[in-house]
Length: 342
Image (cartoon, rainbow, N blue to C red; front, side, top):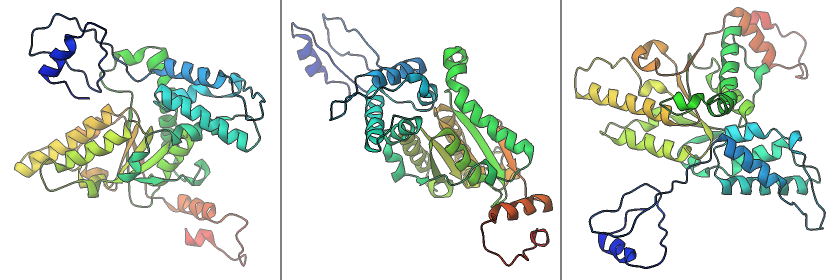
């Protein structure tokens, strides 16, 4: 993964046969006179069309059970474009995910389903992120989220944006015009308890992606450069995890700091810029959550693609929340006055 020493490289070049060198990062040989030519071949992460073809290829491969029976899965019964679009997996991971999905289906004695493939794709993504962030298992659906129609429509638009990225950016070719990645960046702002985390859970469930919550107050360090190192570790692991990153307590790093008055302000701005830069480079979905939108400098928040305000619920919405929390099956004396509580 690191460039070879000049002496070792010179010795290899004296070999008369073919030589193949591999590296995780690109590098150029130098420091000595050589008479051999180097041909550089880059093996990048497969694009959407390649990933879709790989899913189809591995699913269509001969799949015989231990009893010698053959299980055929019609491709038109599976939503493979969603898998290819949501999960940036390499060929080996796709192969293993298909095999694991077949194991699950065979164990339960039924044909292969989208859910089998979805769960296996998540399982074969990078699992190391759990050591740096807390994984949240979604428990809610759209019916549990009580918000004004404008906010609900915007949340659904975000989900549709994530689902439609492969078609628009890769198949239609618009991604070639973008300077940054195809990631989606979102700001959630509102008082505690107004539904920010719940909305993130619902989006993760709708997209079929893992959700990891990072408390930014634990990431920010008073030591210069440590905050950036902490963020780099998180994004480095997340890059191959295909997960939604939910940064809570964004007030710990964001604030009205654009006016530099001292060294602390200057480094605070560096931390903010670094976080936004890594969010823009991340190919997945990142969400910043804050309790106080007024404390965020607009120069920074303008770099985020979506901003959703979670208002404090008025009496009408408080009534709907009470009614949602108490389904009809909950035993009661019949005298619960939700209107009074609201």
